[in-house]
Structures are given as structure tokens and as C-alpha cells.
Image (cartoon, rainbow, N blue to C red; front, side, top):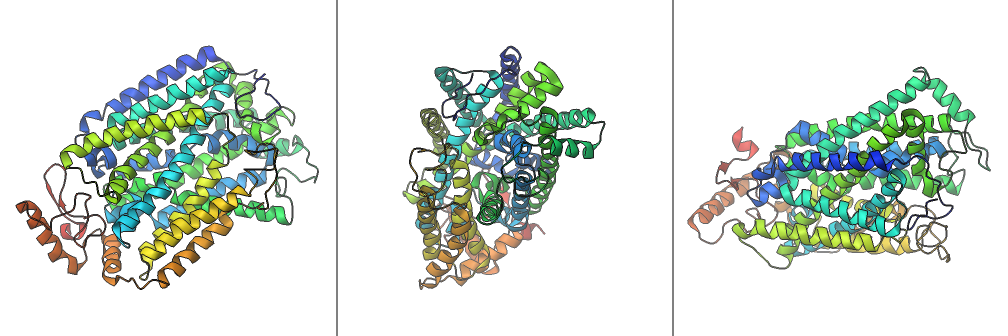
Length: 586
């Protein structure tokens, strides 16, 4: 009987785990990932190589890596049980994730890459005072990193419990520690290039497993999807309101509950698109065109995978029946291993265990690179610290170890706490504090430093105030403090705070006299073409000449452009070769 750490009762009777197969398969997968990452280690010779793979990631590789990043334990393994239990309402969440991918293609992919920066702070600094912009970027990036990391490491404990049968608190903590430190090692070895290879490796294995699962399910029902849906409807678990599995209402019902459902869909759609470690991958691509193409292909890959997982979710209840699936919210992730055990036997259960771990390892490695980039490029500038190019790579590697090891230790310490609320909160924070700021920075002439501060600090404060009084902190049995009930917010707080973020940005901007039309014009030119605005070309030439002569006026150590705001798209690269802007190349 399983009583995993922060897992609420009743305990689970784990009859499917086969550690004799799962452990050797996991060791083999870890060794394979090590050699995959090691294959690009020698290419990391400069800070740009480590942080953005020197912008050498092609469209196909980036598309697979970008599609791999949102394939998490929650969106693959938990969603299967969620659909088996709640049917249509749960499947709608997958449409919200795919909508967020499309939003990323339309808003972010090409303009972000054309700006030629490294971090969120580079985008903000083009429209606001630099130190204020980078402090704001660091606050929101590191908050999201912290929450995502804690819940990701907690998911490792659940995976070892569900797929390896481990039920010892000390053993679970040690397992999380080992997997976390190995992931830090992967990121330390080869930076963005290595993490990209890791994500591609994870995507290939995940796609293979999803395809095999889908074929097994279809074979069980003679390739008839309608038989799967009919059997799922017949085997559905009854709910008090009596809603069908294939129709809306099982989880959210009517009236106020439907607003709860709408709020969840809205927050996922707008929040996931703005999560830094996902959309900042665009900086590593070879061009803005390739960034847009890879984001479009990634969207199609994710849509295909989610369609398959929705089918597998309905097949779970069709095959297992209403009593064998996970019947409470906290146990939704047991439906998939039971289905795999039923259709594929113990060998497939053992092989699937390392795939479940890879879903977390890939996400945490991407998170860590994003946090290191933020500390290196944003916090150092905000603190007035300007390491030389020769020392910067050493500083980056030290930051990788410090942040990575520290985060793993904090994650292990937080295992007894029910931190599932961190996932929706981090998504809401991205939609509240990042989406409005990036949209205004790219498309609104009047946006300024005050507007940025109002969005980031005002929106974040409002969000955390509402979260404290929501379901995840007090009230339900799976809340952080289930014995208390001070909640008054039933909907997802992001439904309020995302529009409030846009409103705060507008109010803050118009309340300030600061205005820089030239910076906006330059950003538009750079976002659309990747080149410098005509008025800035002479400044760039003078800056390059001054830098070559070793005099003042050259490019700042953080890579600022000729107007002192944002990164410079031209100039010599880290290997000493003279690069050209896209417009100059044409």
C-alpha cells in the first residue's frame, strides 16, 4: 500500500510496478542520454555556445525540442487518468495547450528571434530603463523557475512510487536527489546544445511510446474508435449530477462551475505561451524565419500527440472499467500504468518507467538553462557586475552548479508539502507578468519603464493575493492547509490577473512622462527584419569601430545595442567572425 509523501489518502495498492525491469531500463536510458549530451560538449567554448548554442539550432531540431518541452508528466500521464475520469471536460484542457502553442507562433517566435537577445530582460530593456527592466525580468523568471522546479522534482517522487513501486520516504528523497543531480550534470556538460539534444532524444522516445500505446488500444478494439468511445461511455464512473463522459459537465457542471472551467482553459492558453523556458528557445534558432517554422511544426507535433493521449484516456476507462481507474483527483496518474499493464504486460511497464522520468529531466534541464541565462545576463547587469568575456563562461558554469544543486536540495526538502498548486500559479504568473509586457513592448509605442513595473510587480502581487485565498492553499483535502478554509476565489486567479496585467501596464505607461519613440521604431525594425533601424546604423558602425580600437562607446559587456537598449544584432560573434544583420545580408 502506497503512502507517498504528500499523496493524500486513500493509499494505493500498487500491483503493476516491476522494478526488476524498470531500474536497468532507467540506467540504460541515463547512460544513453549522457552520451547524447556528451557528443556536443566540445562545441561549447564561449558563453554564447553555452546559453544559446551560438544560435545554430536548425528548424527541424528546434521544432522537435520545442514540441518535447511541454510534454510533461502532467500533460501525458496525469491527463490520461483525468480524461478517463472526467471525459470531455478534461480533453478540453488539451485544446488549451495546443492553443497556447499557436499563440506562441503568432506572437513570439519570429520577432523574439529577430531581436537577437539572450533572456527576457533583453526584450524588456529595449523599451525600459535597463536596470529596472532586468530586475523585473529576473523576478518573474526566477519565481516561475522556482515553482516549476519544486513541482517537477515532486513529480519524480510520484514516478518512483507509481512506476518503480518505491514506498520508502528516505528512498524517494534519495531518488529525487540522484535524478536531480544527474540532470544538473547534463546541463553543466553542454549547455543549450546539450539540453536541445536531450529534448530531441526525449521526444523521439515519447513519440514512439505514444504511437505504440495508440496502436495497442486500437488493436484491442479492432481499429474501431467508435467502439472505444461507446465502451468508455458505458463504463463511465457515475457522478452525482449524472453527466455523460462524452459530454460537458462532469467536472465543472453548471453555473459558477462552468466559469471555473473557462478560467482554467483561458489561463492555460495564454499562460503556457509566455512561460520563459519555452518561448525563449527561439533565441537559439538560426533565424527568425526558422524560429517561426519550427514553432509551427512543434504545434502540429503536439496536436498529434495530444490527440493520441485523448484516445488512450478514453480507452483507459473502456478497458479498466469505473473501479480500476484513478477515482480521485490525486490518483489520476495510476490509470495509465494500469492500462499499460493490461495491454502490454510487465515488460512495457518497465520500459515506460524511464520515459516517465525523462519527461521531468527534459523539463528541469530546460528550466535550469533559462535560470542560468537570467542570472548571467539580467542579474549581473542589474547589480552592475560586468565580467569579461574570458571569465563569463566560468561564471556561467559556476551558476549552473550553484542554482542546480541548490534547487535540487530545496525540492527534496519540499517533498512533504502538497505543492501541486505551483503549476497553475506559475502558468498564471507567466500570463499575468510576461505576456502583457512582451505584447506591449513589441506593439505599443507608448510603453515605458513605469508600465513594465506596474505589470510585473503589481500583477504578481495581485496574483499571489488571490492564490492565497484560492482552492489550492486552503479548503480541499489536497490543499496545502486542508484543515483551514479561508478561500473565496473558486475560479483560476489568472482569469482576473491576466486582464489586470494589461490594464496595469496601460495605466502605468500613461501615468509616466517617459516616452521613447525612437526605441519603439528600432524595436519594430529589428523584430520584423532582424536588422537595425536606418538611424541606428551609423551609431552601430561607430560603436563597432570604437570597440575594435579598444576605446569607449563600444558594445556594452551585456551585449547592448547602439542606443544602450537591448542586444545588438550585428558585430563580431564569439569566434571573431564579422556577422551581418539579415537586411545587410540581403
